[in-house]
Length: 118
View (cartoon, rainbow, N blue to C red):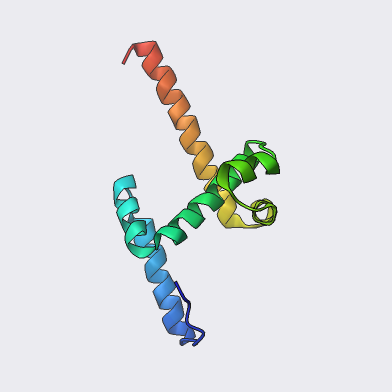
């Protein structure tokens, strides 16, 4: 995807971004989110975002740069950049909190099923 070098009115840009954020925030189901993102993003854009999230997850889990590079086929520069962003960018903090919350829920769901045999 090519991004136009022509600037648009700041008010229009803010409105367009607000619409995007609202649409994403209103998407509640995974299947709906998948359709939304696949419709809005190219396969390369989607995979690029997914890789960035995976790098952050692996860094949080303590994997080495070498392991991450090998698993995700990314450069050291990418891993380093994301490492820096994890420490400073509130967006990555939200991503990691969401991942941790989901992992916690899955862990306890499994334990409850083991206890009650379901």
